[in-house]
Amino acid sequence: MNFNPNVLDCAAAPIAEAWSWVKNPGSDRLIDMCQAVPAHLPPQSLRDYLGEAIKNGEGATYTDIRGIQPLREALAANISARYETGLDADDIMITAGCNQAFCSVIDALCDKGDEVIIPLPCYFNHNMWLSIRGISQKYLSFDPQTAVPDPNEAASLMTSRTKAIVLVTPNNPTGATYSPACIEQFYQLAREHGLALIVDETYRDFIDSERAPHGLFKHKDWRDHFVHLYSFSKVFSLTGHRTGAVVAGPALLESLKKIQDCTAISAPHAGQLAALYGLQHLHDWKLEKAQELQDRASAIKQAFDHPQLKYRLVCAGAYFAYIEHPYESPSRDVVKRLIQEFDLVCLPGSYFGQAQDKFIRLAFANVYEKHFDEVIRRLIASQA
Ligand SMILES: Cc1ncc(COP(=O)(O)O)c(C=O)c1O
Image (cartoon, rainbow, N blue to C red; front, side, top):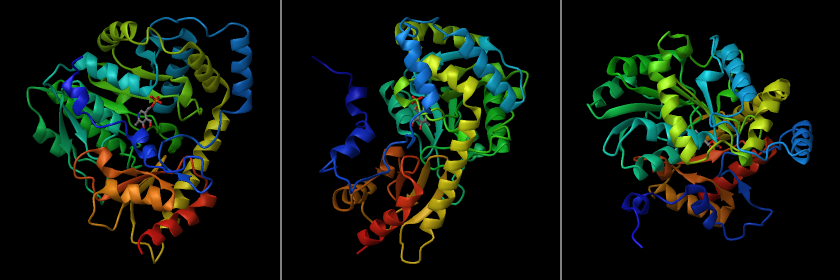
């Protein structure tokens, strides 16, 4: 059997690789700051609803390729309220998670050899999919002072093969939230060059819910240049139900329907029911969890303000803290040691693109504040 060299050359799945370094996965001493998963289950009411629905035979069938109409309507209403716009169900396709949404959008837009502009550090699965598809990644450099990419640098990277700019805000792995003005500049650039601005907003529910994260949906021509990616995984603690969404113009959605039909056929039906329940009934629960995450981000910032600590917090927000480590060694070696000698499971910066070896990522959503002092103690102990 011969294998696709792009897949062979692609980095290994990061979370699985980091866990392969754990000597005793069942140990009580482990502090797991590896994967971006909520520490809590969905609320009991959602679990009761879904259990009953499945018992009654709901959710066992395929759905419309684009997802169930009530979920698409509810998400359109949710986005319209938050972003002060007027979307409807026809602007939306429900996907098997936000990762599948990204992969499908890339497949719809890019051919082998095309180019995509993407800020460093970048979400590893974006990176991996672009490599697998033979799409060239043009990186925007990382400024550790701001953790925000520069649209002017993006302008200088444009060629006739550039098909899209990809942003993730709030960002994985840095936790930075880009300002509406910054996102707008990227949009104008995409419009000027006739390409797509793809914004993965998986973590949008964990920042100020009173304000629109950006004003792109207000542009009359947003459907020609903007693609919004969303996930129900984190907001309603539904990571295993694989439900996300693409919000885009009709031309892109037509292409996505073909891809969806060949891959997932439809997003998991039970996940769609769960997501719909969440949008209809869990508004207050969502705000409560968002506040908890914001408090946790403040707590981790405070915890890193420690005189003996040589690890420097670069940025924190949403689910993540991006940390500069104090060693000359590659981040992979630093993390291996933190895992094997200090039972602190986290990810090396090198998984997030080039020139990230000075950094490590701590995902704090799955660890409560009460553990932060111990995290700091272990980091200090590792300095010895
Ligand atoms: C930026 C970003 N996009 C997408 C995903 C995956 O979302 P989903 O579970 O909906 O596929 C993650 C998960 O960590 C993420 O951090």
